[in-house]
Length: 245
Length: 245
Image (tube, rainbow over all chains, first blue to last red; front, side):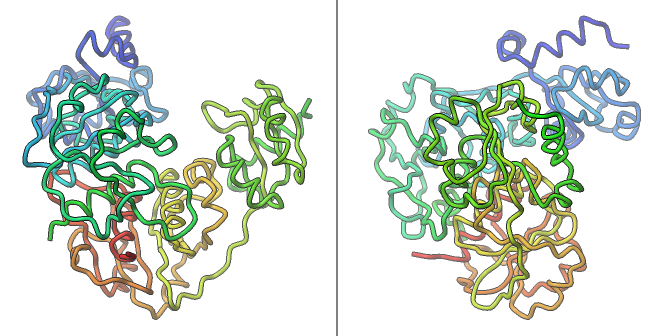
């Protein structure tokens, strides 16, 4: 049985303020938990699983502290509508200020939707992008919906917050922006280094950032949809810019 | 004031069974409602909006029946966590069995996640794909989450259900599948016609469908992520197969 205080501590991680204080966050469900356990057991503060899950996964949890919980307890801990067998409290990942030289990195401008943000982390990881820099107005990396959508890619991509644009302002590498009125992804050349900036799908890229752009890049529209979601656009543009054969 | 029966009827549209009976579904929020009002006012059975929304949008609702509702009423009608100014009950769109000749269409195999399904409808609409055929195990088109994620693209793309694969089995055009072990999207030729089959990101494409495939197509992985979500993969593959300059 979990103590009231332990439950309360875990529940408090729903709020960014308490996550920052504890430098800890929650990941839920067998998929992401399992992948993180295999790769980074040292990140786990504690894991809470249903009896059956714990018994089936004993080989994964030899190095982590855990508790067996009831379904009711898991429901109380969970931030999801449908709690899923296991939940873990993990230490924040290290984040560092990226030095961009011979690689392409992503810069997100006001990507508020946590599902989109998490998806973008996973896409970056697929394409071997090592750094994501978040400008003003992005979702918090450790929001449970970001964590869930990123899968375990959250552990492999360095996410750095640049809310005052100080980092962006001092970069001298080429800056590309996803926009509706740029050069087609089909004709633009392969990019081996620089910063690809992705804006909010309804507001576009904010003007202080737009001023820094060297080239705008567009996914030509053939049909009628008003826009693509930011994660889908990121995936399409990256696939064309990297053009790896 | 709405009657109890009217509220109950709208709430019943949360369930596929009642949607099928009424051939009606719910769309929520100013964005999708506004776009549908401009394009297809005849699809609206009735619209329910907060006083301010109705007053600002009188020009859009000249041809539709509407009621002004209170915030409390809107909350009772809404299927969203945060109800958003306006909600409409609409007639089902017409759906027809596609004849595929000189175009590319999408075939979805077990795309259960409504957000992914809705996103794929929007992507199809962006790329001018006119038909999506849903094999076994896809989400219901009129699930509120599908509707919200599709934006108004749901009104422009024909979605046809083929749960027993009868349609797919009789098609003679080339069939392409998104897979992890196929030809690279970077080297594959432009496709002007055929069927692009997208499977569930965790289970892949089911074997009865896999047998029908002429060519597998892969998004080369550079980094470490286990998979891309089905909507992102669809967007990337379509952008390469269509290769419009």
